[in-house]
Image (tube, rainbow, N blue to C red):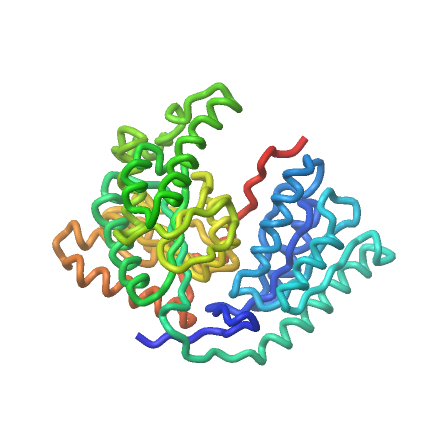
Length: 386
């Protein structure tokens, strides 16, 4: 399998080559969306906050924004702000400049009017698009891959087909020196002792147990509610999942069987190679964003019932667990792991095909979500807005 990517100045490898219009506040979402849609290889996302935030949330958001900009699929950044948001856009600009990528900041209140503001964003975007179009792919090792792992709209088959197949592919990528990050802390509840036994050392084991058990306690403390009253969600229950532990047992299988080398906070970047766990919520938009900030250039998203989820920065490969759902959701699904349940192909064959699809996607093959222009990601706020 030959892999080609864009080698960045920090030697990290991107498998897409994009300009990011980075919103500093939700007030600019429509602006960044409309401008991004008029260019090829320009991405943005709907940012739901940026103003009226507590200080610790501001720092958390800015840390996440910087790491989104650091994703190797991003080649240049235009920060789009107002000038009155809680986010200190000048500080954000200085932090992103340290990434050694082309970067600019445009603020409405500094441009002498709305028309000037839009014109400047467009002109900068056009310049960056022309500049990055000169970048060329080169052959890179499989170890360059940082694969994000996500699941949603799960059913009982997710834990015996799609997640099992993905887990085998993850083992292959890690054996070849690559990295994979799995997340969704609430969907690991009940498996903390199993995961602890798979950790590389006691420090990592203690951290993963504390994060998973602490998440359940945090929900109880903040809301007075038991997370098990909301998870599994109604769609999971209708599909046949009965308990959170059952959902979790199927969910964590996508991480394969290798040792967990590191446990990350939300949107943190790994310092080690191999299998990594990141603390994220189960809500896909927030979790996908955390994985992208963690540097994942490709995400494989397993599903039982089907989902249109995708991101504008890292291609999302949708793998469905059963053939009935696949036949209903072909237009948003990239691969049918239900062939394993049907006996049409064995685990080795399906794993090989998924591996090839990951490589093909890295080399430029567009996923269904990319072709449809699906854009589902947002930053997980610590305290919300007020």
